[in-house]
Image (tube, rainbow, N blue to C red; front, side, top):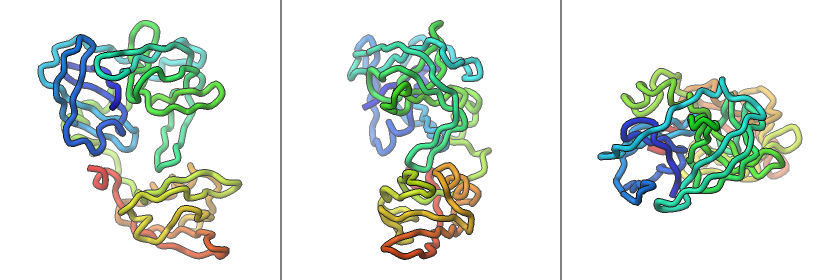
Length: 262
C-alpha cells in the first residue's frame, strides 16, 4: 500500500518502491471511487514511479521545482491512510543537501523536513500554496530530519521521456551490484545482499568490510556508489574486502537495476 498524487490527467506520481513487484494496482480516490492503474514509468535512479489510471477525471496539482524551495520554508504532507482516507501533517524544510541511502541510491538534491509522515509512503510534499514540491520517500526518524522527499523535477523535467519510454533512456546506464551497506569508521560495511544479484553471485556476504573499489580506497557510501556508477552494466568491478580476518579481492560482474526489478 502507498500514497500518490495526481500530476496530470490520470497520471499519478509516487515512490518507486510502492508498485515494485505488483501484478495489479488498485487506486482509491478521496471520494471513495476506485480504479485500476498501470505502471507507465519507473526511475530507479531518482526513486519515482508514474502510474496511469483510466477514467480518472479529477483535478491535478501544479508542481514547483525544488530550486524554489528554501530551508525553513513551511510545507505539508498529504498522504493516504488506507483506502480513501487521507491525513495531513505540517512542518518545515530542514535541508536541501545530497543524500545517499543504504541501498545503491543517491540524490544530489533531497528535501528533508521536520514533518512526521502522517500516512503511507509516496505521498506529496506541498508548499503552502498547494503546489507539489516533492514525493515523500523515506521516514528518517532523525532529530530535526523526520522525512525525506524526492524533488518534483525528477519527474517534471523528464516527463515526456519517462512517459514515452518508461524510463530515462537519455541517461548513461550505470552498473549495479545489489548490496545494502552502512558506513563504519573509514570504510563501508555490507549489511545485506539481495538474492540473485551480482553481489551474491560473486560471493559477497553480510559482514564484509569494503576497503577499496578498482584500487581506490573507499571511505564512505557516496564514494563506493560513485565508483560503481563509473562502470556500465556488465563491466567487471573489483572490490577489496576484509572478511574472515583476511583481505581479498572480489571480482563482481555488475548488472542493471532497471532490468533486475522490471
